[in-house]
Image (cartoon, rainbow, N blue to C red; front, side):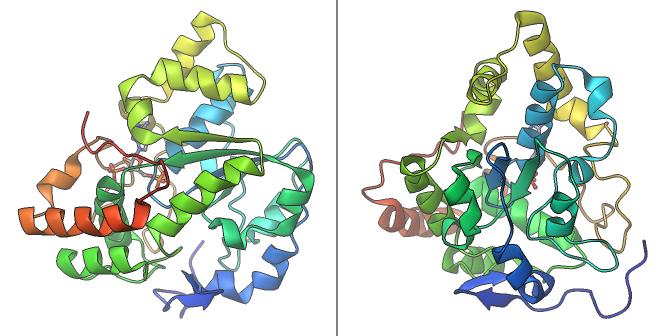
Amino acid sequence: SEDPPGQERRPLVAVDGVPLPQKTWENWAQIKAFQAKPDDLLICTYPKAGTTWIQEIVDMIQQGGDPEKCRRAPLHERHPFLEWARSPQSTGVAWADAMPPPRTLKTHLPVKLLPASFWKQGCKVVYMARNPKDSAVSYYHFLRMHQLLPQPGPWPQFLEAFMAGTVPWGSWHEHVRGWWRAREALPLLFLHYEDLKEDPGREIQRVAQFIGQPLVPAALERVVHHTSFEVMRANPATNRASAPRSVLDQSISPFMRKGTVGDWKNHFTVAQSEHFDRDCASKTAGTGLAFRTEL
Ligand code: A3P
């Protein structure tokens, strides 16, 4: 799956003020018109919040805790990525359209860009959030290795861009705040990466209950084991090992990088941390949202 030349690292293009990959922008009319179905389950995250992790958890629950069934295809083929497009592959929308229901879909879109049909159909949403400091660090390493998205530049410069929301999919704050409020309009389970790290069994059972497939203890144990960082890192159906180097160059940084809470401490200076905290405090004031940056 070699790319035709010219697809690499194109600048982002704003859709309603949100910087998105150029291919997403080119396909925007199709994405906007996407027809959700009432039994669609939408997995929604800001990039690097643990999307892959919650995708594998959801699939394991849906497959009754059978890891063999989850090996049927790599994750990005099991769950169409709604706004993704990369020729000559079919777009996320075309992929989803061809999939028999019930479908599980993935998106990074902020609330204001979600296709209208999801609201009309009242689709269930599983939203996963991760503290912004670890999200920024994870995003920085991801953009270093991702060959189709803009380079992050040096860490201090990337951190400013992250705070300003001039990174792919826009502002972390707007994303999290918007989806937090969306709980009032959609059946939405709001999860925290840090809670999942702290007590995966408890959080996985919450997900299972939310999607209407509660797990018996033995199955729950299998899901916890199979979705641990170590097992997912070694699993070709989740570690993106099959992605060509022209898309993800894992020699620069592995897709399954660290999977911890608090790696930001290895990247932020004290001054950067204080500056970041002040910026965050002003942007999340009054939302009732709180994030843990260590366990
Ligand atoms: P790090 O870069 O901090 O290691 P996404 O799937 O949204 O791109 O998120 C990727 C982040 O989730 C990476 O964070 C990755 O290591 C982490 N991750 C993936 N699977 C995980 C798991 N099973 N447990 C904990 N973290 C996981």
